[in-house]
Amino acid sequence: MMNKFEFIEGLLANRQLTQLQRDRLMRLALKELNIDSDLENRLKKLEESLLSKTFLANNINVLNENRPTYLKQKVEFKRKHLPKEMVKFLYKFSSEDRFKWFTHEPDLKIEQINYLYLLDQIKRKLYYPDLNYSTTGLINNFLFKNEVEIYYPQQKINLTYGSKAIQERLEKGENPFKIKVEDTYFKNVIETFKCAIEFRIDYGEKLKFSYLIKDFFLTHLSLDFTDSYTDRFNKIGKSINTFIDTNNFFAGMGKIIKWINHYKSLSTELEIDLADNDDNYMLTVFHKNSYISKDVAHQKLKGISGDFEILRKYWFSIVDFEIQADFKKNGKIKPYSISSLDNNTFMRIVSSNYVLSENSITPINDKIKVDGVKYLVKIYKTKNL
Image (cartoon, rainbow, N blue to C red; front, side, top):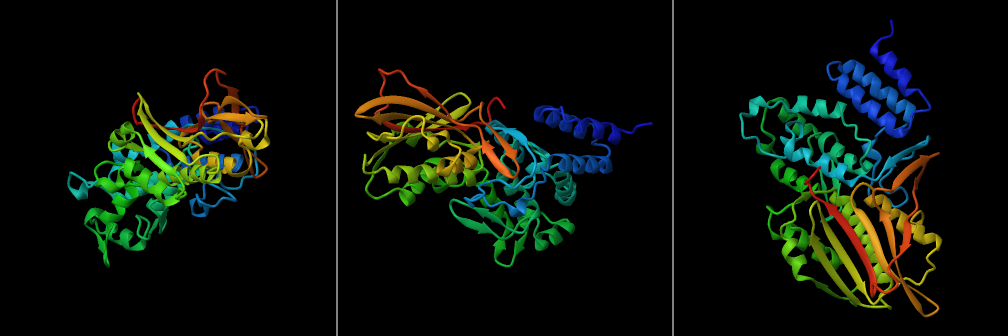
């Protein structure tokens, strides 16, 4: 009689399954097999073998522009751009006990929390097909490896839950928030990690969104520019509290500033705005009186090569992204919208190459000029997940 594993193996081996169907089957199977860890592990190894989705976080480097964010693969499959899934995943560190106690000091007796057991549970089920690989890589490194790199403010965490010194203390039943290794309080390390997965409002002015953005622009923007921030940016930016992969966020923002610096000869006026919408914040970086001189059909504007591709891979399943710009050709100006990352964006992995779907470029009402180039970045909240 066919057992459960053989039955599911047969289903997964069906070449006619779409990637969406395969992912759904895996979720249902893993849910069904919670009570059988050996069978679950066998099934996950089978899935990895069939799809070559093996997740090797120690090889991930979010700032490696030759392979930004992604690993080499040998087969073809499709991933959708789903930034809300990233928010939902990172929010587990605030809402789900299995993750929460690694970032929040327990309000119950420490002996009631078995950290090593929780780590084992997470490690066996760290499978999130809809996320950016570097997001899960950041989590994997903090929980199971020896160090974590944070892009901005740039620093390296050399003490993690995977560190031998921390593991030994956890085996003794110690509270990780009370552990001190040489001159390092692990509580401070945890707080640093929390700022890498969330824009926070409770760690002082210098770690609030508005300050981080201003400091980042001050550090990276050419001195030729006159940058201004709207009143609502200053107000809303002090109260943003949402979960996000800050490594990839600031890596992508660095690319935008690089573009703006490159075109400073067209204009040195910059305005940064922020809107508070129902389920998202809209950050607008407006290079006033600038324009795009390339033809709307130019290969670079498709977003599948060069810096544009790198930026999109940084922000894949992190934020939505659109550019609204005046295009200037033969002295005539026509406004267009470049939809770069939205719910229609996907990525295929073909023979070790990560191939993004092309940008969607559409004209804006001819009577409405942009009066420059606007970079629109949609940051999702935890609302309506």
